[in-house]
Amino acid sequence: MGSIPQRWRLLSGQNNWQGLLNPLDHDLGSYLIHYGEAVQAIYDSFVTGGNSISKDHFFFKTGLGVGQNPFKYYVIKKEFYATSIFMGASCGVVRDKDKDEPGNPVSIAGSSKWLGFVAVANEEGKKVLGRRDILIAFRGTMTTAEACIDAYTSFVSASQILGSANNPSVHAGWYKYYTATNAGSTYNKTSCRDQILSTVRSLVNQYKGEQMSITVAGHSMGAALATLNATDIVRNGLNKPAGMTSNADCPVTAFVYACPRLGNAGFGKVFSGLASLRTLRIRNRPDPVPRYPPKEIGYIDVGQELVIDTSTSPFLRDYDVTAHALQVYLFGLMMASQLAKGSLKLRDEADHPNELDDEETLLRASRL
Image (tube, rainbow, N blue to C red; front, side):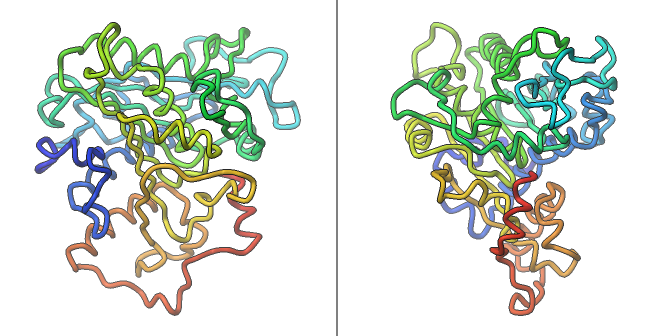
């Protein structure tokens, strides 16, 4: 991990990544690839609604827990699920009964789908990473119901979880996916939100007195959910042990890849008023998804932005089609690190326009 244990606060946004983004700091590039790989592993192991790998062997069997990879020092504490029961049958949602099978993670889970995990660094990981890191990772869209949720772009009030000040409103589909419950489900008797927050609360209390961080990572739809979750954690004081003062806050950082817009100006005010919260949006220039939903209907961007551009790579074909894929984002981060060292030649940008603004491309963004 090089000098990351000594620099983790800077890499997690203590100074809003000043001087680290252009050119991309080598340690920061490695840091972003590290967290992106955790999200990619969820995609790789997702099967018919659940995780095909037990949480005890997840990092090893996805290739992240071998060699010197820091993920060998993380322990998954919770696999969390979200339910799309609030969506209609037209989206393929089972409404009458959640057809899941307890104990069988590869069964058809009805409206409940495995969305990610909460993990924590063990004692050895604490040494490698420079602190006790709590990691929350969200995958992006993988089901028909989730594609319908993505397209549910009307606003809904988020005051119930973020307070009424500033009248924060967010994307209705993602908010409901985050907060919905299904009493008939083995996996979602409690909401995705409650599953995560109860686990975070327990871990923060368990490790009080230690140097600690909370890192939330997500891609696409999962990036929007990661932004909401990170805001929720800080707004409700879950980044400090119970009964402690604000001086005990641990930093919360969201690294969000291909992140669509989440909320309105009121949400932006809540977000910007949280001193312990930092968010870095990684955007691939030819990817249309980060420009969805459009600003014209009231959506805004939050956090800092790091722009990469895989359209200039001599190694990728069909860059306009693959630009949204997380693996391409991780390649782009590696490419940006090489550019910073001057060891990579780009293709001629004049022959390969990299901004995709046509209506058809923006429509593609509605399926994250």
